[in-house]
Each structure stands twice: as structure tokens, then as C-alpha cells.
Image: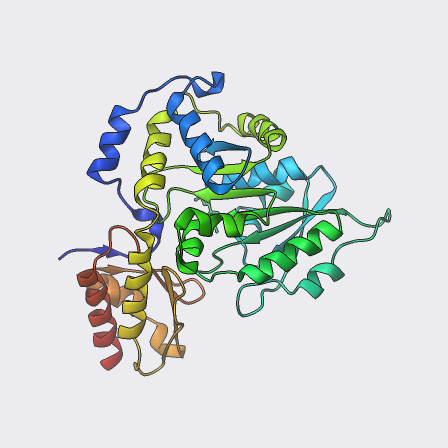
Length: 340
Ligand SMILES: *Cc1c(COP(=O)(O)O)cnc(C)c1O
């Protein structure tokens, strides 16, 4: 039986063509700035996303942390969503390692933070308070795309109060592809509203490892110092950067296929008793399974060769290594469970 892995878009294996690009990569010592493949990737990402400079990072977590450390000092504060990766899923790194206080806010149903609430939580210049320095958003957030008009308003609010703006764009290109149009132009429509953006290449883009942080030349200079301190100075990093560069050139437009597979899955799960499916905007399908029926569903799926996760709701993520037949296998396993 084939095992289909919907747990995350991080599970993708590098394709044969990507491995060839890795094998052929020209390498140097990137801590000396000598790796041509790392330099080429950084330049390409900076250009295509509309920034002065970029920095190749081992993980998205380290990329976000280096960004927060570069924007904020000890005793500063960042405003962030309760379910944002930079607050909930990064071990509290900004607070633990940076002495940067998070100000988490609840999300609205569309994933946005209420701008009235953001404004109300910007602290006045007063010795009682941490200094509010940064607004951090995430796009996509829980598979949802933040509206462009919202990004413009959030950006204007941050600028009005002198806050820097960071985007955790782990799945930036999913948001761009969902918006339609030329992918890099669509991505720049989003990134133009931020001072720094972190993009993951190890998610739906299908590279084995790596993220890229973008910003001004001065900002990236600071982030580079933090990256070294955090242990992220990689030597012949080009072997990994070449995989990310291959993904940048060849795997962005195909994210639309993942979105179509997610829609196929959501449609296939409609009409099951006690099961509520949210219409997916990108490559993540959340399924609410009521009460006692929830018990055992993950184990049943696993017995049928379908891996998913279920921390808050059942979550299925489509990616490079999932086909229409694989989606149909998941639908059949779910139908079997809920019919029984
Ligand atoms: C995956 C992810 C990251 C970074 O994760 P790493 O596993 O550290 O690369 C950051 N933000 C979001 C929204 C993510 O989904």
C-alpha cells in the first residue's frame, strides 16, 4: 500500500532535476561570502521580491528570529497573532533569546489582526511599558490569504506609529499564486508592504532545507551577524541554496496544482455526517470532526495509508508529492470511517 503523507508540505523529497542542480552547484565558503550558489540565490530572491538584499538561512524559525533580533532590542515588543508561527511555534525564541516581549492578539476569522486592536496595543512612550517596535504578520496564515487592501492598511498604521513591519512569508508564494497573475509580480504586491520578509523553500516549493530573509542592505547586514551568533553560518551552503534556487525557478507556478488538489479533497469530504470542511484558499484543508467521532480517525487513516495531523482540527496539506489518486485515497478512507 502506498503511504500518502498529508501531514505537511515540509515532507517533500527533492526531485531528480533538483538533485542534479544540487550535484552541479558551484560551491565556496559562505561564511567568507565565497559561495557563488548562495550569492546567486540571495540576489535572485531579493530582486524578485523587490528588496535590496537577502540572506540564506537554514530554517524559517532562525530566519524569523534573526529578523526579530535585527528589528528589536532588549525590552522592545512586537505585535503578533496568537496563532502566528513567530509567537506560537518557535519556542518563544524572541523572548528567550532576544528579551523581546511578544504582544499576541487574537485573529479574526479571516486570519487578520483587527487594526483597531493593533493600534490599541501600541504602548505609549512611558517607563511602565515595553517599547512597541514591530508589527509581525504571516501570509498565508493557516492556509488563508491576507487581503491586499488589509496589508496596505496594516502597513500604513505601522508607519504612522513608527513600527517596523515583518512578514513571515513561509508560504508567501502560495498567497501569490492564490492571488493570480504573474507569480513574482503577485508576490511583490504583498512584499511591498513590509520592511523584511522571510520565505521558506522547504515547504511547498520542495527544497530539502532553507529559507531566505529579505530586507534593506543595512538590515541584512545585522541579520547576518545574528545568523552567525545563532549558529546558522553555513560553509558550502550552496549545495542547499542550489536546491532552493531550482525551486524558485521551477516550483512556484506549480503551487496552483497543490491548491487544486486541496479543493478536490475538500469537495470530496463534503456531506459526511459530523464533518465540517473549510473551503481551502491554498494548500491546507482543515476538517472539523465533531465529538466522539474524532477519536480514532487519524489511526484509521493511517491504517489506510493516509497520514494527516490533528492538533486543533484535522489538517491535510497538499504538496509536490501528492497526486489526484492520493487525494482520492484520502477521500475514500474518510468516507469509509464516517460511514461505519
Ligand atoms: C514552517 C514555517 C516556518 C519555519 O519553519 P522551519 O521548520 O523552522 O523552517 C515559519 N513560519 C511558518 C508560518 C511556517 O509554516
